[in-house]
Image (cartoon, rainbow, N blue to C red; front, side, top):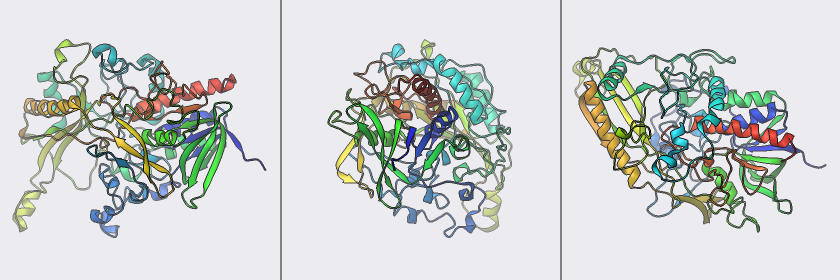
Length: 562
């Protein structure tokens, strides 16, 4: 009996993959979701489980280091509660060239991928991000404008449910469609007010994918705090119980779990993708699924790894790589610059039982704004924003014993701290490629990284530390502590750019709808498509681009052009 042929094969179930499955199946297309994770469900969520119920009380990090030395770096989200969601670094290695350290974090192996543990900060990119090259001459503009994406930003935000403060649109950060904001602490209000008055810089609640108002049967956030362990009330956004649930409800989306994507299969005579080869993670068997169209949403590096591993006689340097830029122009926001300070004249009473607001604060970019010459600096181009916040907390670090120590612990410190996320410039010399000597436990050749930050990013980190110290002083903070320790690529987990979009097939892999220039029924709808990174968190824009691209794909299939 002939195997079933789907209309579309989607690889990956995270931010983009969930939206692709929802949008395409709701349009009447038959979709196969090839996902390397096992099935995720509410039964696996553990946000309310106390640490004392765990075997090692969530304190035995040294045990996780044996098999997950990279994954435990994932912002604290890979721990005794959740480590089984993440890959085993020994079974699924990657390599990097000497002098080019890289940390490939957030490699999750349950349905929903990174959406299970993501930070949820949801910021729009602006016209100044999409056309940055026109303003400072570096790199290339995106082949689309903010106006092209604006209605899709609206659509995604209203479905996702994002808490956020209202503000007049800033040219560098357009406002979104938000639910009512969560409250700031007294120290945050102090900081926000004084920094605006004295320095003219804008701080706000970080727009975050946490509900404050019920939608689609999902309850408002109840401030339990550890969102990275899942959410039984579905108050944060995870594709598992939102976009994917909608897709499965149509009866036209089939999940193929535990399927490690390996290659895109080609019909070379017709120059068309015809399916996907994957390895069953349980049986280690090689299996195939066939379809009229293939959409890669596996996460930037993983999608490009599949394309590079899919070389054919026609595409010897990687599938859909006639331009030669596949794998190049790797970007990840740089971190490592900021400051913290104390407010001894702000009241506050800490509580170990919460409520724990799941979202922090955001300081909007104020450097090198194209519309304001006074913001330009000579040491770097582009800019950065900050994430952080704070309030009263127990004085855990106080020295002493007995009653004196107990009293000191309950003498709260009111502290605020912020760290930067800076734009990483797109450079051809930052790239990934297939390591010819290493395969993973499934026999798949692994990625090798040749990526590092440059002087521009390092200058940002230094400026971010000094500028935050300036803001702390303006807010009246005491005991200000600055730091400027640039992160290695991978730490922000905002990887983009390795299959970038553009109008010219000679210098780009995809068009503005994330469709391959070379192979018309092949799309890459994750962060791979970004021509530049911006300084904003990338997930909201990944989802927005995906919805727009899916609408184009649906239209093309209805016209018989794909």
